[in-house]
Amino acid sequence: MKLDLMKLDFSEKRKLVKKKLRKLEGLPTLPPIVQKLNLMIEDESSSIHQIAALIEKDQVITTKILRLANSAFYGFPKKVSTVQNALMLLGINVVKVLIITSSIFDIIYKEDVGLWEHSIGVAACAKILAEKVELKDSQEVATAGLLHDLGRIIERVTFKEDYKKISELVENGKDALQAEKEVLGIDHAEIGSFLMRTWNLPDKLVEAVDAHHDLKKTKKFKKEAAVIHLSDILIHVRGYGTSLYQKIPPLQEKALKVLKLNLLEIKDIFFKLEPKLYELKFFTEELRREMEVSS
Image (cartoon, rainbow, N blue to C red):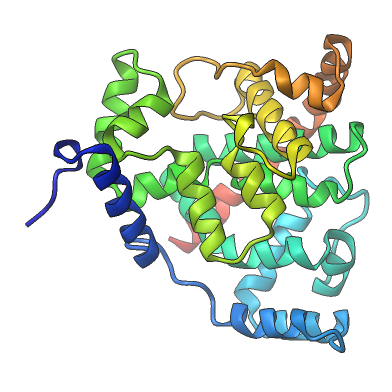
């Protein structure tokens, strides 16, 4: 018998949703290479060359990593042609995240091109912002931008009927986060961060995703979360891609205070962002052609 989440109380909904998330119903399992990669990363005697050799044994994952490493949201001036090169430029943490989530990116693209475009737009903006405020590991911050709406695709794939109810509520004027909580007892930011924790992704990424609509939830990585929050707003303002929001999400002034940015500096971010978004359109078109050929 199928349970109707709308008939359950708030805490029961949350429990049921988290139970379902642990089983990852409707989503691909983690690639077998991930376990070996984790062991190798934990072993201090492992070299980047050895880690690259392990990854390159999986041709599909290698192709995806190189495609993402060469996309405009990382913006390297030279082509990244090998996994070892990607590891050196992006860092082991970012490459590990790309491996774990590579199949998710395919689902996002197949399910909702608009959400995919919004996600890579936020990633590109997050990298520019992270560099502007001199955050360490701007590539990791960009990757958090790429994953910030992971919960949305989980809702769409794993909770299909509930997602329809959420969409209907939003179309009738309900705030998107409130609609999610009303139907599921949890919002997409918490769904995404919950799943990322089960995948043992870095705390920096998990917290940035969890708090990107509510900066009060931050504990340690306030600047990273503020970057993702502001990037999300700016990409909504620019109208690049689509999300569940019918309107622009509210900007939390705390983000500007944490990042010590003023409106003139935000204009400068927009100026730098535009050519990146133009490049990303080509990346999206290339991906679309690849998908059409493989399907």
